[in-house]
Length: 176
Image 1: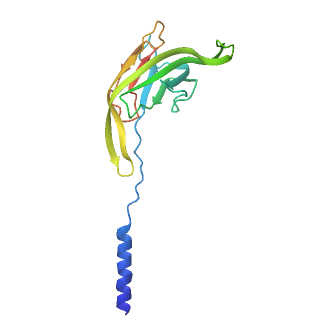
Image 2: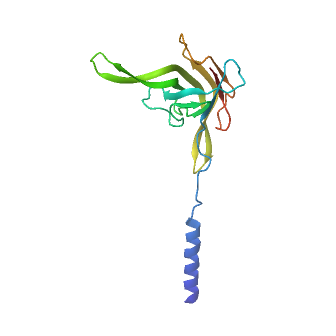
Image 3: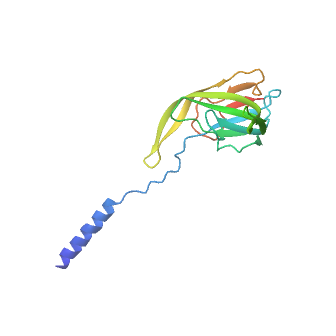
């Protein structure tokens, strides 16, 4: 009788351990951000802060959350869209709120400052990380398309690394 109890107990313990799964914790499962550094157009090796910088996605009503708003900065890290092959941004230098009157006589607040529109184009590559993390998106063949205006504050753009697979180094240089 005791042998049956031990055998049953041993069977339950073995089944219990066999049913356990390894705890999967995702540590390295983030899609990388695009890192951009701002440089002086007159001295291309010197970083130059963009004053009161604001960045807004084209078609969005809010600022990009990975960048502090209206800050003097010489570098930013921004997300690219994973479901599309292009992402557009409004790069605004000397951002400010400007009050104006519309045709109805109402006072409204609009964006003031120097606004340039930049599109970043790429090919998305899905990369399997692990069972816990699933897939992340990396980007290759990165290129830029600056909407040309009469008074662009962005003077030149250089793609340093056309492959975006981490957020540890700059991918793009913007000269102003």
